[in-house]
Length: 554
Image 1 (cartoon, rainbow, N blue to C red):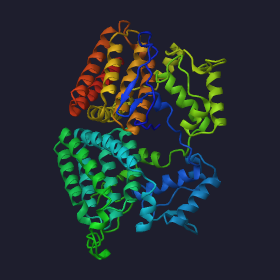
Image 2 (cartoon, rainbow, N blue to C red):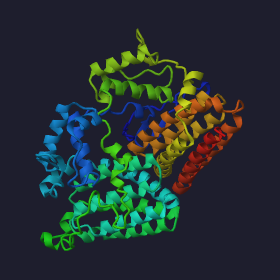
Image 3 (cartoon, rainbow, N blue to C red):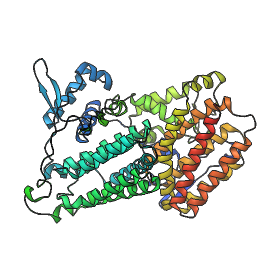
């Protein structure tokens, strides 16, 4: 999900708790915004062929599909992507025309990866025109969240073998012989660091964001000369040192400033005009080409044949299903999730169908199909008359014992740790940004939610308030990606808590009291405009919650 957190004229909705029946509004510098904006943001409707082209081209640019690598057979690839053979052929034909792929005939033939030439100045202008400034800012916020937390975690968990791989990746960045090759190697460096965290979620998300960032940065006209990015080489070396010395805080801070510096350098509209001269005088071409390596270039020469780009988690990102559910199903899931975690509260009237279809970016027919499904499932109801419309119904917020036991089987301590790693990355950055960016009205809303939680003892209503609290903080970060990720994490966390409720002690007051104290520490840090204090409080809260949930297994 994505949400424009700077839109005007939207209301925030509280939970279904009896003590929070009144409408809770959230202020911003431009008016009022609503937590429900997370629910009502546009639903992706890009065609399957463009999505397949985009996915594969991103993977090739980032070096996750290496030059000379053969793609799986068409039948296997269309099954992995979940698209028809005809759709896949259309995508492959377009990629061949763009220069990303080539087809070879014969016994050892197939579809093979090529690296296209550097985009021309005209290509860059056309590509960069597709990206707005706020897109780059939001991407930088999200990339910083994942990359900085992953770097800190790698400093804590990296093995000597991991450090050796990171060191080789740093060297590969400095030996890059072109702008495109530098971007490819820099993406691989951050993915290699993420692999050292031992967190599948962190690695998966780092891979996805690097694929996107690589293409976005390549589309800019900045950095024509190698000297423009030499400061980034220094960042890489400093980051390697911090990881080698197991200095988690320093590694996180270096990575955070590195992402900011990268974004600033590549978003400088005057950078291309600062350098003149031929290609042979650009500082890149002066370097000798490195010896050809197999795969991504992360295979060591000392017998270490572990190629990070070939790890199953990374391949899952590249070859994950394209498109997923249809638009009607995506709409059902989006609205249902919003209701379940209390972003849409019982009794709330949804916007008119014409307005809602426009907000979601879908046709009125698709919306009606989704609303009909939600009415049948008991989540919505339609009322006639002057005050009529489509309303959220009071729903059963807690699962049955059978449902909880079924979900409980899939939960393990390792799963909870992996979930928490990613949650801390998102919540930590979102909370730090909220301390910098939250308006006075948003701060009051955060405080109000924290106070209301302290009065709630019923776990279902407390959980809804808790979700609204964390999503409100992420919304105040002014990052649509962080807000969307936090909402998804809160939906998943609700399912986890529901399942583990069978193991909770009957007297939950001490647990809720501890959580309330942590929420207050987060709120106090945001009020003080203390980003690092807010980040630390959010990460400590996530980590303690994880420890608490794991303790129920013992």
